[in-house]
Amino acid sequence: MIRELVADGRHRMEGAVDSLRSEFNTVRTGRASTGLLDRIHVDYYGTKTPLKQLASLATPDLRTISITVYDKNAVNSVVRAIQESDLALTPNTDGSVIRLNIPTLTAERRKDLVRLVRNMAEDSRVAVRNVRRDVIQDLKDLKKDGEISEDDERRAEEEVQKLTDGFIEKINEILHHKEEEILEI
Image 1 (cartoon, one colour):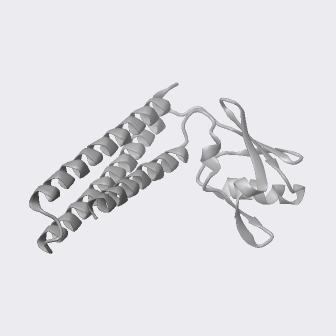
Image 2: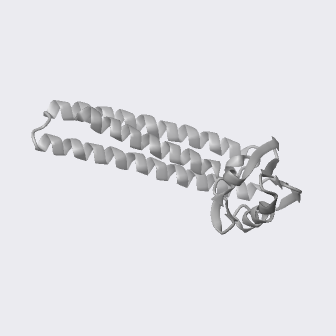
């Protein structure tokens, strides 16, 4: 019973860290990344379709994203979706290939992005702590119901705290790496 609770807590904490990683991929830094386009959905014959399903994405150099659309009839829809997104990028079309040039970031924009990723990281830390709180509450309930002893509860709480500390540290490492990436000129 205790192992299952701790394993579930670990799984939920891993989910919070994975979610942070995917959120960080959508934050534009000074270098090209296909992760920027993860949130783009294209109106493809009346259906909102993720861009990754309609095209091949590549980064030929540090400042360019290349989008090769499979269906030439969808090129205009892809261009429109990119223009309507919050990326503030201008697509250049060449037949079925669309190129996005990633401009360098201003110092002020870099500071704003650092603030944004710090807030994202704090939200993930809060999610991990909420998981810890839930697991510890479940352990207290088990002890109250007489299903586990006080010693078992204390050991499990220490294990959950160690897990929490480890995941918080992982979030801090991911944040530090992303901050360096944003501030890199």
